Length: 88
Image 1 (tube, rainbow, N blue to C red):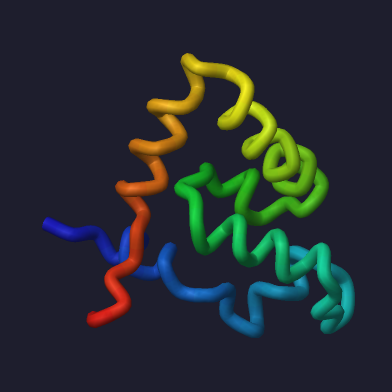
Image 2: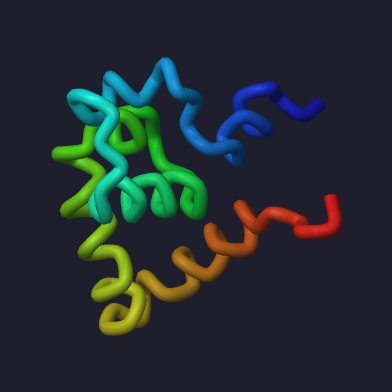
């Protein structure tokens, strides 16, 4: 059974939730990068919601993926797990 949260995770953040992430209706670069991060990776609610936590984690993700060999298989598995079918 597919849970509703798993389907909703693949959608961009709704307008009413934006206020929680960033004060005001700012759509600057950092916000879009955070949104891309949320859209691409499975992350727990705290990382997804709180910019202060999500942003440094997101910056380290690529560094860890390229340098740490133990991290790479996990990263690849997660990437495939959350892939969105363009045809759907």
